[in-house]
Length: 512
Image (cartoon, rainbow, N blue to C red):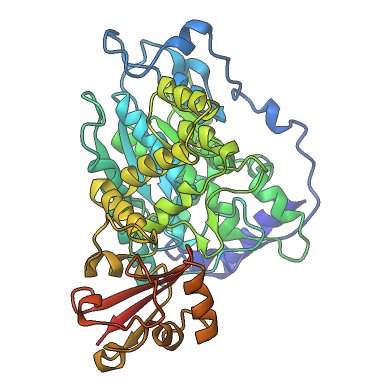
């Protein structure tokens, strides 16, 4: 019934309308009715070709750093060993004789920065690179105008062109910096390309799309995708034709990249399985077609799809959100210091698993860290510190890591070994409360008065109690006397003061 309604709506629109370029506004005028549909009789565990064979003992002993091996390490073995493999369309990716692959991962520009959930895609791309394969990061300048319905209960808001272009540039810059600026990842590392699918979608017209792509798509198959089924279960919301067609857009991206760029592997999160298999199916039907009837001919193109699991905590909740929102990869939205601190606070129950998933440390080294955690005399958070260092270095580079470490030391009250300067304090100002005061308002003022006027503490009596408890600090130096007044030398570089009440309550005072 739903398929007939779709065909009827298209026929009516095409007859009564005019041929226009393939645009989201065109599709949004067509709605998919929320008709009942037959349930999928095959559960996720029965997906065709998605079985993953367990590693043998010899394969588990195989390490990425085995320099004596003449053959490159197998990417599936590595991903499986580290918990980065959910499903794969064909186990033939384990074939040791399989030549260098070209893999792509898509990133839709829904924001000006990627977030921690997107980091897994970059990490898996990097593992392909480290195994000698080539990688493509595809920015969805075209698909971002429609919006992927996967995992969404309502349609994504439409972005204006200026915002979309800003997001495309921002995401492209982040991916390029992380993947291309990683020094010495592997002596056989492959090449990285950053592409935008708007480059090949911008001139496509709707009737051409129906002729070249739509004729090979099966509505029944499209409606069986989880992203579609869940939305159609909601009678009020339903799904627009634009969203329904998204899987074909992403599927054709794979067709184009296979034909024009030699890409033969697509990767994505587990929620992308339906979109990925739509692509492998389109390649099989379009490129491997029989010219007479459109059926699949003899030599089926060798293309593969691979998904990695969502990043979850041990309690089943999604990892990647903080109290303040998403964990952004852009330093302009989240400082390297705060990024570092997020990983430093990971619970012990999760840290070993995250070391495997989010870092490139060898399995042996991670196992040693895990053993150390159970030994007497283990210093708490040592494993978390290593996790935070490795992930921060990968995302923000060595310079970003050093900035985060310096800020971390600067925020430790009583740490007299770390010399504070204006740049270091300003580096953490975005992550702690701050205020501005005139030079004359600060010079010679009693420290207790400054704690109140700056907003660090509510009253002088509260400041006095904090001082007597040994928790009041001026530029990380403990204040011992109520009579202490602010001197010129207390103003760091004549620009700023850092006040602390206990370990976590801080205030940056900017001097004007």
